[in-house]
Length: 281
Image 1 (cartoon, rainbow, N blue to C red):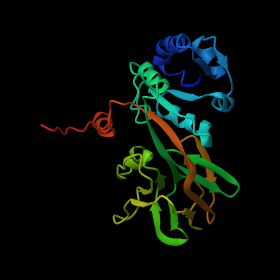
Image 2: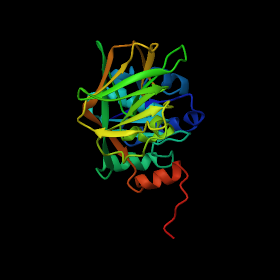
Image 3: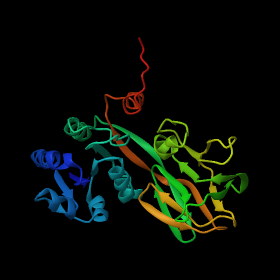
């Protein structure tokens, strides 16, 4: 079995953890595959391939780093729907749910078919001839001018509202604990299917986040009074958006298969990462 490793080798923990992890994979009779830059930076002699070819050969992908590393792995995997396991090498890590002490057990459980897996909804985004996807969110932000933007929002062709402010975030339930949450959006259970629309610093107290049907088509259009803006797809791809041209967003025809720890619930993760203080006793 081939295990594709997408590694953020700039994380200080990577140099301490990844070499031993690769050795352990080899001892289990597994074949680790890495990108050239990561293998070279960590001084590892393993099979190397570019990211897109790596995921095409892998039976499982392990993202070692932070949430950005897992988001990158998800973009590389795309519609192949290869299972992805996230190992946190430092930082908050909502998506990279396994700690370094849990990684080997996670692989062993996967090999034994005793793992837990969740399917996470993905957003598909199009603008003109450009297309892309996002596991977390697509955020329409102010452009280089720093001027507020005016965004018309439509759902299935019907006018919903017009927001004046810093922009809007369109998120999946997985992304509800990312940018959308920072903008006062709701936390949505990650295996649900829904589309979240959260205004960014709106110039109206009545502007509030919306939870919309997963099968809806959302259109965002800058009015003619707006300067160009930037659309960020999971913070990893950026498109310049011109006034009076629409961005279309809807549920992608595939999902992300996320391997998660068997012994930890989503609420335990929320309590840990968000420092909730509630107790049953």
